Image (cartoon, rainbow, N blue to C red; front, side, top):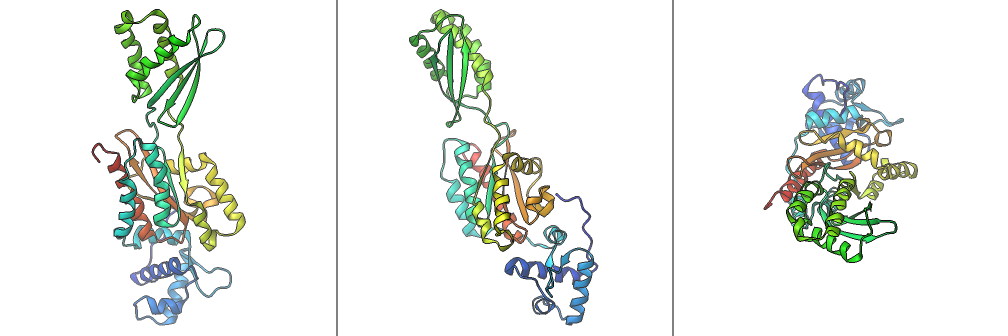
Amino acid sequence: MSTETIPKLPNERAQQLLKVLIQRFIRDGQPVGSRTLSKKSGMDLSPATIRNVMSDLEELGLIAAPHTSAGRIPTPQGYRLFVDSLIRYKPPAQTDIDKLKIQLDRRVSNPETLLDSVSSMLSDVTSMAGVVSVPKGQKAILRQIEFLSLSENRVLAILVINDREVQNRVLHTEQPQTKDALQRAANYINENYVGKDLNEIRRRLLDDLELTRDSMNQAMTDIISVAQSAMEGAVSPKEEFLVAGETNLMEFAELSDVETLRRLFEAFSTKQFMLNLLDKSISATGVQVFIGRESGYKILDNCSVVTAPYHVDDDHIGVLGVIGPTRMAYDRIVPIVDITARLLESTFKPGG
């Protein structure tokens, strides 16, 4: 968020005119002149008075004149004041809520599959780019393990984690292992530990072996003991984010030139860039709005990013949000991002 000091408006008249100007610019995308403000402000002010107020707002850095236009447009500081003080946020339209609920009510077997669809949902509902980060520290759940004999007392352990990530580990054993012994060891682990977190499996595996050692041969005991080290080498899925609807940004004139789009799409493909941005919201309470340079990235100077954290459980937190032009309908977008995070949390809760 911005650390700049946002100037205070001198009076309610300036406040109302700035609010109307920003609302009109968000709606039409065109500089707003004093004549339009006179008609739409609902205030009985002369054109001269309105021009004087606009001059004051310009001196405060809240609006600016693009090129030689007689009208004015909001600056990032103007948007910040608007977002923080002038908007009256309203609940999302019921049609938007229904769209979100329909998607989230399609139960899936694991969180990652659900998260795959959240960025698309946000993009569809807002007509902007939707983004969601996979929660930090998300558990690595074992779905399957297989062993394959290699040469020179080596065994390849193939671990399927969280349904879609495959990790391979080369294990070194004290003696060659037969295909049957490897299959029995894999069967034992798959029957007893599939669906459990790798950390839990590592803790339990050797203890459980002590209890069952008498009922299995030495070869199987050896390979399962070595497999325990494979669990130590396996890691939780890499932190990542999912983005959808980048091409929606082409519909906004201020973002539509080829060079801007090229740089934007390159930025989306650079994971660390987005992860750093989303991390700024990880410990926030509620919705955060980054306007222009507040994101910390020059490529987003003409964009705003609206984010909200969500909790999968007490420890695992992710962030979802929307990226669009600074000229976005904040009064609509902010509540949509907020309710999406809350609906997603309720989906993850047991019995949710």
